[in-house]
Amino acid sequence: MSLYGFVRTLFLSHVYPHNLARIEAMCKELKATVLRLLPQASNGPLSQIGDKQDRLQILKSTAKALKDGNVVAVPTDTIYGLACLAQNSAAIEKLYNIKGRNVNKPLAICVGEVQDIYKYCKVVVKEELLNDLFPGPVTLVLERSATLNSDLNPFTKLVGVRIPDHPFIRRLCQMCNEPLALTSANVSNQASTVAVHEFEELWPSLAVVVDGGPIADQSRLGSTVVDLSVPDKYRIIRTGCACLATVDVLENKCGLSKDYFS
Image 1 (tube, helix red, strand yellow):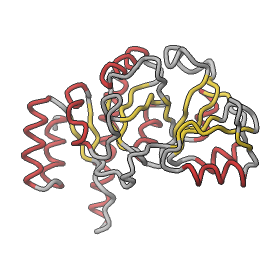
Image 2: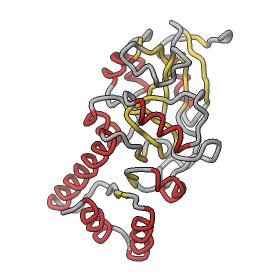
Image 3: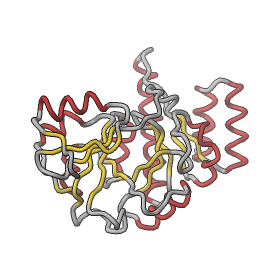
C-alpha cells in the first residue's frame, strides 16, 4: 500500500466523515502528508495490535522524512513543534526559513532518554536532577559538547535540551538515533499551537504533520526553560507551564540556589 493509501485508510477508519472530506481535500491541494496518531485502544487485544502497527508505521514514515533532510510537525507534552535532525545543517536552515525565525534565536534539541544528554552536553548537575525533571515540560540549558552540530546555534556555547513527556516524540528520537532540533509549530512571533489545524499555513513546507489530537495542556505557555550551565545555580529563562514545580525540585530536592547575577 502506498503512503497516501495508508493515510487514507487511517482516516477512513478513525476520523469522522465531515472531517475526512476536509482533510483529504487539503492534503491533495497542499501535497502534505498528515498522519493521525490514534489514542491508545482499550477495547480488546486485536484493536491494540492494530493501533501499535499504525503507530509504528507513522513513526517509520516520520523518521524517514527526517533522515531525508525534511522538517516535520509533531505533538509534544506542551504544544505542537517543528522538528528536523539537529546534526543536519541544511535541515536546520530549512526549519528557520519555514518558521521565519531570526537566525540569532537558538533552537532547542530533543532527545529520547536522559543518557543521551551526556553525548551532546556538558552536564554539571547530578543525574538525579535530570531524572526528576525528565521526561516533562522543561527545557534545561546546558553547555554544549563538541559532538553537537556546530551549525546549530553557532553564536552560543549553550543549548536547551528537552525530553517531552510524550511517547511518540521520544520514540522518534530513538529511531533517528540522534537529537532533533525542536521549536514551536507556528510562524515566528505568533501564538503557539495546540492542534494541527492552527498551523495549516505551514503544511505546504512540511514533509509530515503528525496529528496527535489536541494537546492536553491548553495554556500555550510552552516548557519552562532553566539555565543549569553554572554549577549549583539555576536561572529561569522562561516561566512556561511548570515553573513552580520545577523550582521546587531545583531548590528543595536538589539544593540549587537561584542565580541573580547572570
